[in-house]
Image (cartoon, rainbow, N blue to C red; front, top):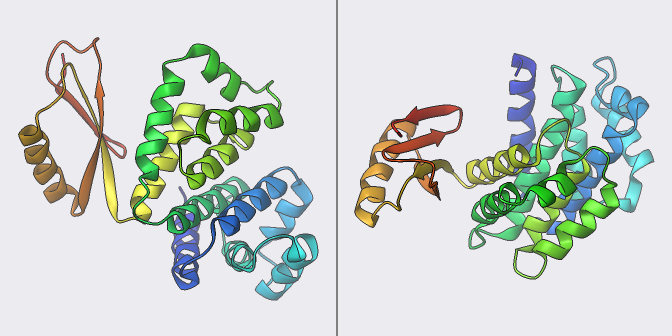
Length: 251
């Protein structure tokens, strides 16, 4: 990630903080707009043009999307377009980041979106046919969307459905498992904690998890929640992944 993109992300997240509470429809609209931009090179180029000012970009956003998306989505889209990004790909990634964070806010703290995303990631990883159906480049986006809604809608939160539905329609070269993990991490970060993935041969006890949580929280400087995986291929020990850092003491 370039320095320009890091600064752009800081700017868009500041704009998000100024939005306050928003309906889930605004997040859905913002993610849908990002897909339109991703599929339209001329629009993407215009919105990332460093020579155009904020007023010009706002006019373009309103001309293209107008009243078809929520006012909060317009505000965040204009904010993102007004930033300087290291690449057009980073701009799309930034819009996705904003949309997922907005969905997390709309869902409320009582909804465990990160857990639902991790659970779905494990479901997909354990079913080769499902992984192919959702991850294949040859699959029609509409068919993927229908499949996601059929699998998730009965039990998952509406915000989870919105996020996953977007991911399968705009993968940007990523595998489905990677996209779901990244989305879960974005939700966790928006809510002020990190998620550590713990892989062991047998489930850890409550006491073991508590000690591990205290140790990792002291290192990370923020609260930690666990995504635990029991893997029969692990003979012993534990593997911990926290963001890009991996501590592998497994056998």
